[in-house]
Image 1 (cartoon, rainbow, N blue to C red):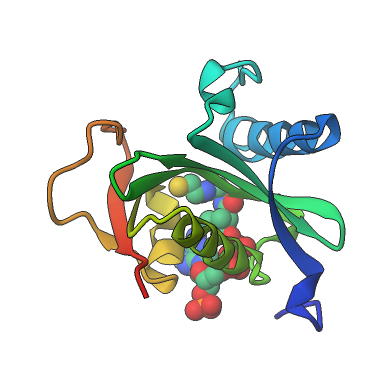
Image 2 (image 1 turned 120 degrees about the horizontal axis):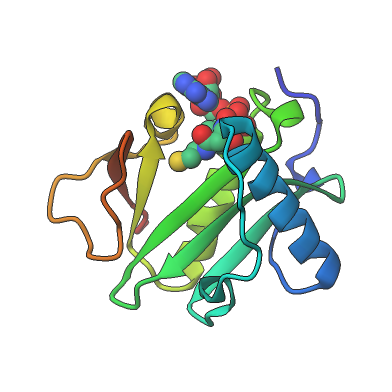
Length: 157
Ligand SMILES: CC(C)(COP(=O)(O)OP(=O)(O)OC[C@H]1O[C@@H](n2cnc3c(N)ncnc32)[C@H](O)[C@@H]1OP(=O)(O)O)[C@@H](O)C(=O)NCCC(=O)NCCS
């Protein structure tokens, strides 16, 4: 069930301020490392700062709610990496809004196709939001990952 009345409560921004970097890293560390019993999340990886990589923060009512990084492969395609919604906010439609806003953002960059390495337990989310299993060749930069399913979506309108 949704707990807001107006989708304007959500904004998606490219991370740049110190506070937003903090929020971005906190969400990723908590959701994708600590919840999975992993350690050693590294905030200083140079891939985060490349110009064609877009670290994105979804804000809900002004607070960090979700993240992903959209890597522009500069051939009309891109990879959504490390999609995460804060634990307390899951199952309320924020992931779907993040997904929609990332597709709009990608569209503005001129991308026509997106890829993701979907965690096995998030497959239902990707299916619900229109993604399908990768049918053609895997882009070189979409690493083969254990227990992940490569997926894609065409976003050209
Ligand atoms: C996957 C994730 C981003 C989804 O975010 P969310 O805010 O819970 O998703 P929503 O509430 O917007 O759900 C959107 C749709 O996906 C479905 N969905 C969400 N998570 C699902 C799951 N794990 N299994 C099956 N369906 C799921 C919902 O039922 C909903 O469908 P509906 O609108 O047809 O009812 C979030 O659960 C998360 O951060 N999980 C942990 C990290 C993770 O697995 N990230 C993905 C890495 S590839």
